[in-house]
Length: 141
Image (cartoon, rainbow, N blue to C red; front, top):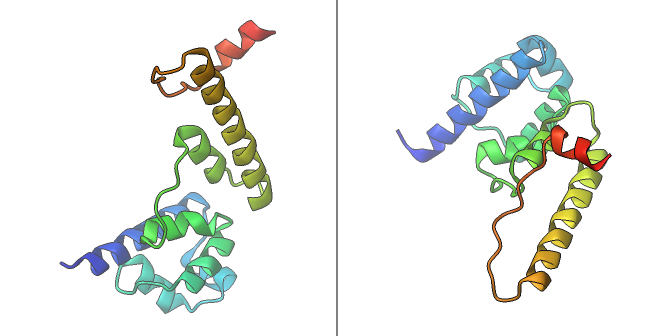
């Protein structure tokens, strides 16, 4: 099977998984996304590869980031950031603007800490900053 068919199947499975997680029927998502029920069914089964515009409509219907669908479809590269950034992007209770603000603040803290570590130990390579657990924050109080 060729790579395009594999991408179509992967995005279809991902959309179906997101739809099931959101407890939305195929008909409901088709209506919310403004696409036909048979077309959405074909996408989920990997028979059709949706355009970026259709992915954006589906993302709105699922209330998830269009970027997440673009990554799954192979349109965009997976964004950097690790588990914290992935969790922020996956949070369905935040708007896209709120997610972006949180990611911007998070990345600014990471850059600041990396710059501080570089200036404290010039010439040494620093390990990646490990995320802190809730227990670590309790010690700061």
